[in-house]
Length: 151
Image (cartoon, rainbow, N blue to C red; front, top):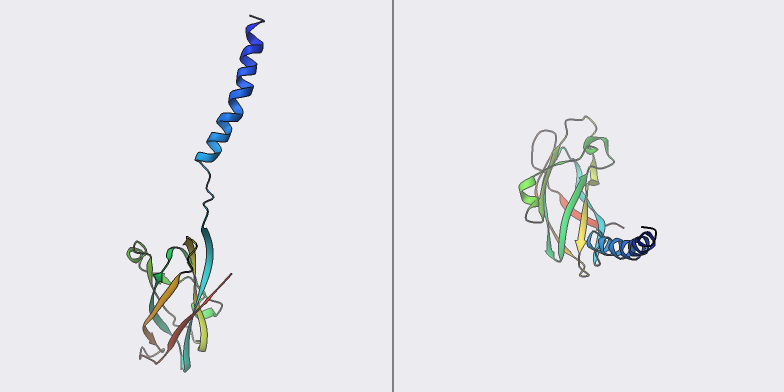
């Protein structure tokens, strides 16, 4: 029995590091060519108060996955906006929000930040489409939608 114990211990010492290394490779979560980045969305409503909006965002080129959405700094749209979960399955998102607050933003306002997982080395090209922007009286207002890439 005493001669077998050192052989068993030596075998364990040789096998455990090999199994640990193999296990590490199989369950590694890091993937080359994958990074995360925010995309800040702005609406410029000019001199009109912005009370409601709806827009669509998708990648025209490149591969992305939408991993989160947050609201903006203005009190009227501080909460995360509503979005269509079914649209996420197609790597696009339709976002909408409205506010009944008395103090509504005017001019260029960051309305949302979309958090993205970017897959691959190609820099994605984004398409934004403003579906509607409205004031507190539910009247459609002219507005422009833009984005800035974050770091």
